[in-house]
Length: 234
Ligand code: C5P
Image 1 (cartoon, rainbow, N blue to C red):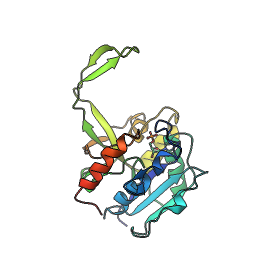
Image 2: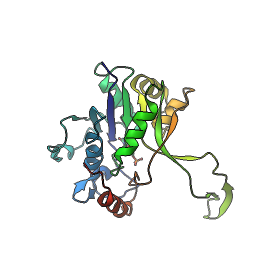
Image 3: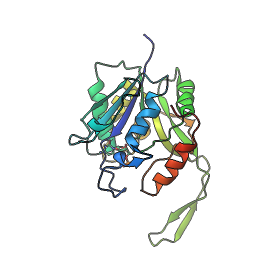
């Protein structure tokens, strides 16, 4: 059987930086929750075989999402943890026995609703045959400043060789599970960080500026604009 591509969407966060009553993944964007947009981008891509959503144990909203017009490849499990990494690890453990060690897992933030299909195309094409995996990312374009704690510039940081990580982050199931089993789940901020800590070097694959992460309510207006303008909506 050929290697499968399984999207894993951690959606168990409380969205404390977002500051709204509802968790960020359920914030409204053009009439739909962010999470539904993210699921639709993944389920609408022909190379994605399954979409698995990780919810918090007290999630009450997912059941109300209307997924009827998507391919029936989406399922959710309420096994989220205290951190994003803990949620991803719980999701992976829940998949043991259902997936092979070589299958690809594409971890994608619920808070990135504008994922272009071309980013998935590039990840799948670039990483085919790769023993480890890689991430969508963009070279840093802005000049970087380190602050001194008083909103003054302490230093200008050379940006040579620096990339900003996005999602999807795409790893072999076996590699990612092993890495997260060994990770400090309170410190690791993305899947690649856990894989790097095992001495492996994930590839950097060109992401897209449209693939923004909604962190603050002000980001919703830009996301709405981008989503409306995207030509390849499923
Ligand atoms: O809060 P932040 O934007 O960094 O979260 C990134 C993703 O990780 C979101 O999709 C969020 O729902 C998820 N997450 C999770 N479990 C947590 C914390 C965050 O699934 N405990």
